[in-house]
Length: 208
Image (cartoon, rainbow, N blue to C red; front, top):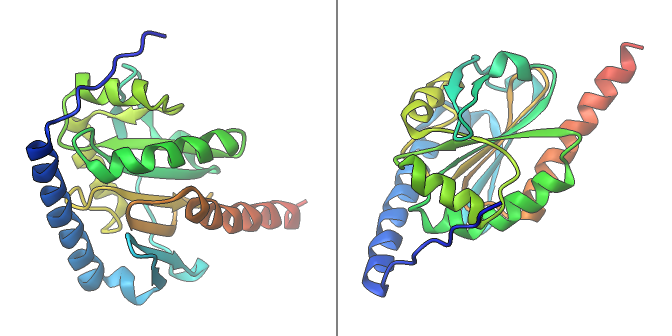
């Protein structure tokens, strides 16, 4: 694998990025406060993100979508029904996205046989996005920016291309079980995935 190191911006550039991210997270929090899903969730904050978990009967049903991936392949999410899926909205320009990348990689590798991870790259170019994935050794594919913005509409208000980063845990029925607006940590993501896997296992066992 050829590793391409990203050229880090100068300090002034970083300040600009941080300011942009603060604005975007503010937009995300505003969406959280006005989004009807906020009335259906158990929400909490950890200082850098808003974390929501949804009861089974109040989960938002997602719709299938197709998207071109950074690998060049095409994803049809109809094929993911029956699997627990983690979607992460990110951009190579986003400072919190870079900060959370190692945590996402850690959890994706830990749950590689049980959970499917899909990235949704936003407001980016493919070269920069691929370089980001190589630098952080991201083990899963992402939809290209041109398709990701449209794909977010398939989550029926649970995702916004303005709130970067955002991470969703989707259950085997294609419903949003948990959402993190802001930077996710490995510990938080594991704690959100585990109960969804457990209920899936319970459901599977009850049908045997």
